[in-house]
Image (cartoon, rainbow, N blue to C red; front, side, top):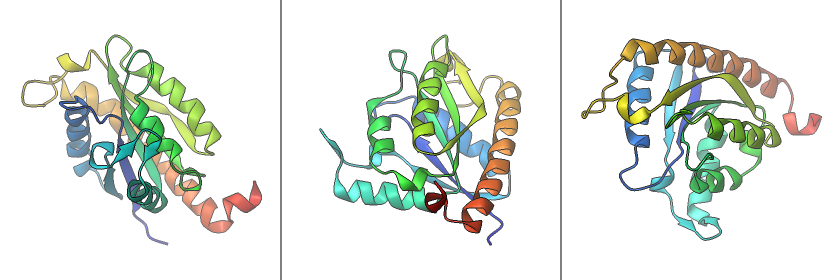
Length: 189
């Protein structure tokens, strides 16, 4: 069994000039300083979506990235008290690759910091047999938390919750990976 955990970072927005890039770039730079895992990126802006969801090539890419991952971190904005439709389309495009894997959230938005979007996503991931961990990084008034270059204004305030979240995500990822290898999850359900 490989010791390294593979974490897929999933961007929750595909809007032009999205703030998601600023938050995800901060997350990725912080993760570079930590060890014990490899990171892959799944960005809906790099995929093709039709009115009914991702096209066949994009679904194949989504399935491949999710199947390889041991855990997920979703960088999610809150739009109108919910999460973006493109994220829902990405999530719903496949089923089994989510099973028995942990999901963590880095959310951002206005006064709620994206927590309303996260609460809705927890319900979705329960249906996908994924484990949404309790600890999140929530950035209220996110636009005021970064300078014009995308650097956090108060890096230590953001890093503390991130370290807790990543450590717990890695614990869940190791535990669930061992359990998935011990038996086939779908056969047990």
